Length: 351
Image (cartoon, rainbow, N blue to C red):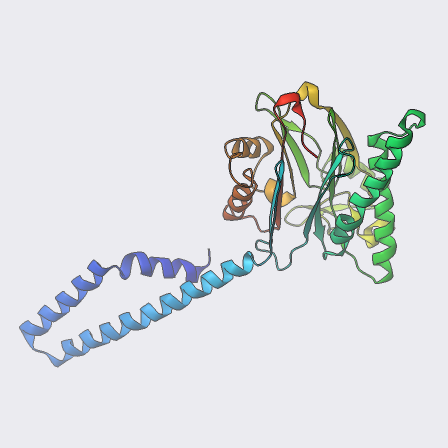
């Protein structure tokens, strides 16, 4: 909260309360009546003028505060279906660089549903490209796989990894041609009837609530300070330094991403995803959360699961509530939260 906002609230709640102003005016009027001095009359009038002027200042500051808040929520995206909801806000950032996507095969609902969250940085171009092209590429490959899976060595896991690497090549080729240094995280989940496959590049995160209410990590953040990542960066001839957070080459606060062609040329940054597969019949999940790091800067995985579990009956399954709560806790970033509910019977989610 700014100093002006704090001053405005003090004036509004303390100095400008009716009883305070009444007591001040009565005291000055009594003084004037008893002593009949022109000086006191002048003081009374000056006090009234000052109070009126301060009221105007407070009203102006309140208006400016409301305008600033409206600007912070100037880009708010939301989505709602019977099994999934998303709430995404620009927050305190100058630009909205988060993107998300949900793609189901309406012709064949036995094919996996694709969920994705992409947290852009250095511009929105990389996140926009990944959101617009990766789900479609995945659906095409998954459809081919379903037709010939008995004679194919491919799996959902290998398809997901290869398509993420392919999309990174496309982003690098497209953006480097225009000297656009934008990059993005990539968090994608493939949900079928019995299995859940999750791939992650960067520091967006997915977590699942199992049948007992426990938080099950579906992904692992890629941060420069992690031993494995730090060794790889050092071996490539790079370095990490602390500037508010640990950063690759003093620039990027994650150790893997899509795009970011200057750091990719130095080979200190890689696009390789971690891909994990989960048995839904064993976990019998209640819901899962996919979110950009704007949420995880304000909530731990366990706290987020508990928060959403208490709000699954809300219109956005708690996604709106937790996104706004992250903002009110002071998160300076864009915030995107996706909540996917699972059917209780058979532990399946609708496509």
